[in-house]
Structures are given as structure tokens and as C-alpha cells.
Amino acid sequence: MAQPALAKKDFPSLGEFAYEALRARIREGNLLPGSRVREAGIAQQLEISRTPVREAFRRLEADGFMTLEPHRGMVVVQLDHQSIIELYTMREALEGTAAGLAAQHASDAEIVLLRDMLDHEPALFNDPVRLAAHNLQFHQALFRAAHNRYLLKTANALRDSMALMRGTTMAVPGRAKTANDEHRALADAIQARDPETAEQTARHHINNAQAARLKLIFEPV
Image (tube, helix red, strand yellow):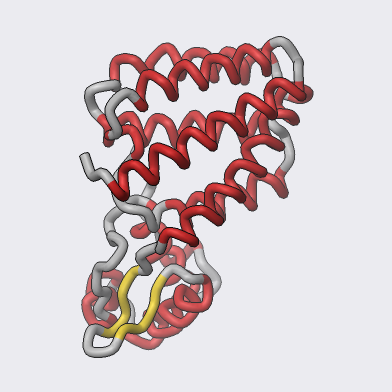
């Protein structure tokens, strides 16, 4: 699902606008890890001066999304092995908590939505890019079903960091079908209003996603 374009008028300053526009480009894969980001080019694309772009660069560098490299300038960060492990550790904790809360607080309509999304997954098994986007929507729906705005805010920040990893685990042979089975088990636990099983199922799912990510790194498909 395409996101609406950001508008300058919706932000308190041009620096904030530039910051959110660049984060969105990283999140959506338009600025890939390791790619060089030119201040003048971004200013021209966003139709603003270079000063707010420079401000956005400083914030993104402080947030860990960009880094200044000798002889290259500002580039989008590429995560190392340890950073990936740390991200998945956080994701396991957040997803487990979200699943447990969803089992307690999700409405019947939200559970129906989760199941409808799962029914659409098999049609995307042979299209890893589209399946990855659909997978992200499923997990966002899970966090919304937890009905905890602070958890959702933290999850959104983590989602942006996850975008710093190249490729998708859905390209790993067999992962698409396995992930769908894990999602269905998770939806079953939520529908059964079983918080403990829901949390453990979500944690197991993220552990398997981490294993697929490491496989993708060391055995590119």
C-alpha cells in the first residue's frame, strides 16, 4: 500500500519535514543501506534549502540511520552482525508482548482482519517483495490489536531500524510457507484468548525470522 506524500505544511519546520521525508525513504527502501546521500540532491528533490537538510542529516546520524564516511560523505548505515542480533532481540520482546496483549484486548473485528490477511499470504509466496510488504502490514495490525500506544510507538521506531537490513527473509527458500504457518498459530492463540501461548508463539516466530535473516546474510539466495 503506497504511503501518501509528505507535505511541508504538515510540519512545524523544514528541518522536521526533511527528517521525516528521509526516514520515510529509508523505511520504504528508496534509500538503501550503504548508499550515499547528497545534501544538494536531497534539497533539490524536496524543494528546500540545504540548511534544513543538513539539520536532518545531523538528527539521522544521531539516531543511527546515517553515518559520515571519509571520502564519501553521508551514507545510510549498514547494520553489522551484532546490530542485527540486538534488533531481533528487541523485536522478540516487543512482538511477544504485543501478542500477549492482543490475546487479551483484540476485538473480534481485529482478529477477523488478521485471519483475512493470512488467507491472502499464499498468493504472494512466489513474490518475496510483495510478501514482505504484506508481512509488515500483518505485524502492524498485530501491534494495533494490542491496544497499547506506547508499545506501538516503540515498534514503529524499531521498524525503521529493521529497514537498514538489505533484502527480505521471505526470499529464503521455504520461509514464506513456514512464516504463514507461524502466523496462523499466532492468530489461533489470540482468538483463543490465550496470552501465554500467544506470546510464546510470537517469540518462536521472531527467533525463526532471525535464523532466516542470518541465513540470508551468509548464504545469499
